[in-house]
Amino acid sequence: MSDLLDEIKQLVLLAIEGEDVELVDVQLKGRSGSQSLRVYVDSQSGVTLDVCARVSRSISDQLDIADVISGKYRLEVSSPGLSRPLLTSRDFHRNLNKEVEVVLDDGAEQTTVKGKVVEVRDAEVCIEGPKGIIRFPVSVIVSGKLCLPW
Image 1 (cartoon, rainbow, N blue to C red):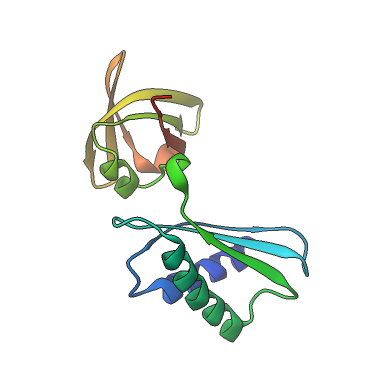
Image 2 (cartoon, rainbow, N blue to C red):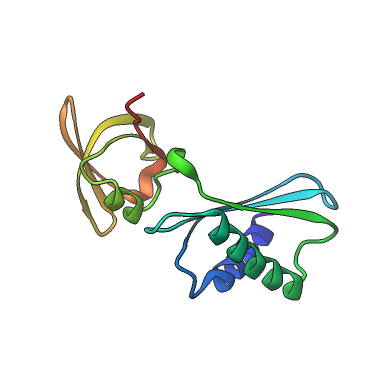
């Protein structure tokens, strides 16, 4: 399944090239013949219904040409919303000075870090929390999310 998902991601990236959107995630759910392909995109200028429709047509055309998903499938294109996962340096850079919660796994154990993103450098993130500043590589992030005020 991961080979198919990787191939789909590459096709989606090709389809959205030139669009004012960034690929956030691609999920393929369900059984062959009745699958759901969810594509999450984001943009600095916001993701509207028109943007989703335009991007959906581009992705659909690319997938139809490549014919990588067997049987019927439903394509859904949307914004990840406020619960967008934070996984890359770019995600954290976009959220500088905001409160986040991040789960880290260094291979020995998983830890949760909560605090304000104070610096992002290449593949490293710095979060200021109750115990001071914690610096860690992006490669150890399991999951991350914004801490919303409500």
